[in-house]
Image (spheres, rainbow, N blue to C red):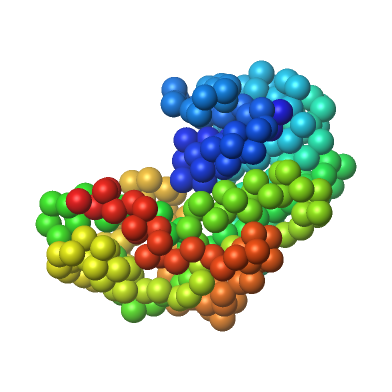
Length: 279
């Protein structure tokens, strides 16, 4: 049995579906009630309290670990989740980390994630780490303004990165969970090309067949919106990256193709599958 945390999110949902389609027994973990594929067990648990994960881990052979922003709080102890898994006989953990662990190791959230990666490597368990860059699905933050006003509002309109489709992240994670050849692997995941927010807005407009105007936010305006959902420190960390991505963050990684044997999906592919959100 494989346990998937964050099972209702942009990565966890397609990962749960992929594992179930592969014939695996899956336990989907989320904080709230959720619809899951037929045959998948659902367990409600809040990962900010590691002991709450214990019922989901009984009988599990592997764990996909996805951490919410709250687990970067000063009093959080995310490594306790790895201890919980080991204590209940889990043999493999696949961790969803961040590209920034390598590209900006001194960023506050990256220090915490690096410590968790280190704890996993030292745990004695089999492991793999996936480090995605920016998510294509972050564009869903624009869905309401596109639907109601035909506008995409974002900072740094002409600074782009090779955003990755969350379904590609899920498929790489599934391969790491199911294939021992990926044990001990660290995979940096990106899309196939650099794309700016202004270009993303045009991609959405093309898929809709109607105009979408791009409105460039100031950094202060963007931060004010972000701190409604994440700590100010994490907002600044993120804005530093998207304002001026460094050479490593602009690089198109070969790792999706290495693992899956195909090129990564483009932002346009993601938009085509999710266009209903913008109509």
